[in-house]
Image (cartoon, rainbow, N blue to C red):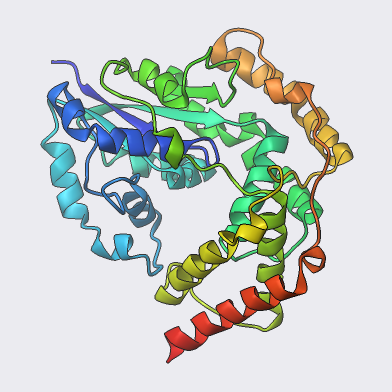
Length: 339
């Protein structure tokens, strides 16, 4: 009997991964009745992706409760019992296995009874840099300016798609599917619809509710975030990623950003027109070659045809009372957790 398949969705980050994961979780029972398993084991919540599984295989040791709860024996049992089902595994953390072939083979080794196919979505590089900058600010881990962040990311593998996917392609060949995260390529479909059509589960999977989608930050919220990260760095407050203190800080920051005074303004675009054009020029040829091979047809990101003007503002441009209140709330969080 032919092996059932495991579809491993590795993100990439900032390509609507949470939308797909939420939709899969919402239809877990219906999928199972149709011969598809989206396991609960390995997820961090019953609506999330399999981040705990990804962290475990990577050897992570942080304090996230999902990793602490993860049981590899239970995950292995769930996968082994699904010989008559196709599997769907999803986590943007799985993209970290791109570094070398050994890591990828170690990951695939957890699915010995299923034929693997890896799915990823790739975003236009300037859009990705802009979006990831907002994300890393919200992680409270990077106090540097956008230009420095953009330059660092441009030198990494993650924006160079032929390099980033090279090891996956060596091992999987045609069983690596990379889709452009692009509204034109979706042909009017929702992202979840696009994913569902790839797996031929479109009648089962329904789109992510629009009211719950991550819409990113506006330029005032981004200024507040950048200032708070710099403030934390300046006062030398320390925490472990995924610790209780870290989770409390994230909640406090979310409350700060929900202040009505920060709700006005267009979505944040922190790249200058020159930097945006430089990124697009830098990757234009490699994108064209990569997607010609991946899609079998010429492709160019629709975003590459427009240049947005930088709308970032400085933290010091925000009202003094607003900044003082935000910094006081952060200090109260430290005091409360330490006490």
